[in-house]
Length: 199
Image (tube, rainbow, N blue to C red; front, side, top):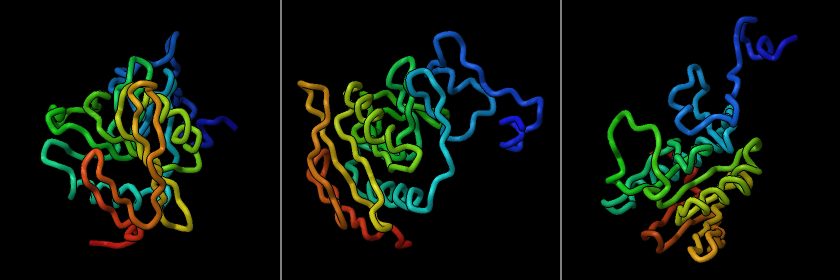
C-alpha cells in the first residue's frame, strides 16, 4: 500500500519534492496544500503531528497570561513563524515580539530581531527539536529569551533560558513548577496549576 493511501490521499497525490538545495523560508508562503503549522528546518519541511490536550492547554495558558502582562511596547501571538535565515523558519508555540513589528493582517512571519521570547511546548514528536535544535538556532539568531515547557503529571514545567550575547548560547536561569515568576524581560507571574482552569 502506498503512503498516500495510508493518509487517505488518492493515487494522484504528489508529495512536495524539494528543489535542489532544499526549500527556502519564502517557499512556505507559496507551496500549495501544506498542512497547518508546517515548519522549515535546515531546508526541510517539518510536519506537525496532532497535538495533545496538554499541549493545547499549555499554549492557551501562556498565551492568555502573557497577553495580560506584557508592556504596551510588546505583543503576544501564538503559532507564527520566525524567519531565522534562508533555510530556517520554525514556528514557536507562543512568541512575544515588539508590537511595532506587526505589519498587518497578511503577515506570516517575524524577524528574529523582533522576537523577545520564543516558547516551545514539547510534544513527543518534537523533543529533539525543542530541546536541542530550535534553542541552538534561536540563540544563534539572537533571540534573547527561550522558554521550554514540559509536561509533568499533567502540569507544565517551564525551563527559562536567557541568551549570553558573548557566546550566543542560552543559559538556564530557572525551572518553574506550579508558579512562573520572572522580572525579565518584564515582570510576569503565571499560575501554572491553572492549566485546566477556564476563565
